[in-house]
Image (cartoon, rainbow, N blue to C red; front, side, top):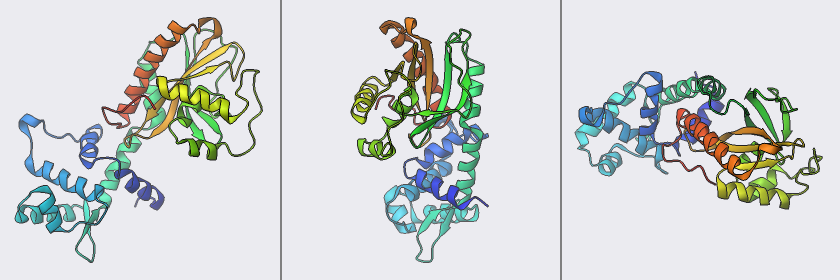
Length: 293
């Protein structure tokens, strides 16, 4: 039995995640849709029903599903009966249909098999690009970022990233890019407590300065920490998204200040964006998701 909180969170996520995308993404779990050249109409119609039930703002009856999908009533009833039997849908007392726990189990398996940290570690193990730079994975936790994983550089930075380490989000590249995915009002809510103590003379000292950095990050699709957590160290940050297209983590690349010329920053930012794209797609992000904003 799924944890109730997890079930509710997954159910909310379904609103922003097409069930056809879910069925397609479950290819990671060994389930693959047939190609368009050799498809299975019943499977596609079933996916269409699931998508309609999940995305509808009101509960749907069999008649409503039949009309909205342009399916014969007999076909709709046959598909619904099979999907009820398999636990993919449940039928309410008023005759409407809701997503069943079998879909939640598949979604849970998909999420477990595309675990964020494991995805980062496996991708970086097979990627020798940017080997001269430290690359970290972190998540936003209140006013801080928490570091989950790291591939350290072969060159000394004078700073060691450790798993579990916390730093003020306002000063870090990943913090700025993850905060930038929120609305301005949400950013203010995140930072409504006392402003963090500056780590260097370059650390932003107030919300207005932070918002300037965030606006630049939103514009360019990557953020910059220009020595705000350690003198002489620059960091570039990009976002990682999940299957609901939500920013769930940040990747940062750290380099020495003398390497942080504009052309080099742009080059490493593009390479880091390619890594974040690969991780995001592995986590189920829509293929056309936007890196900016």
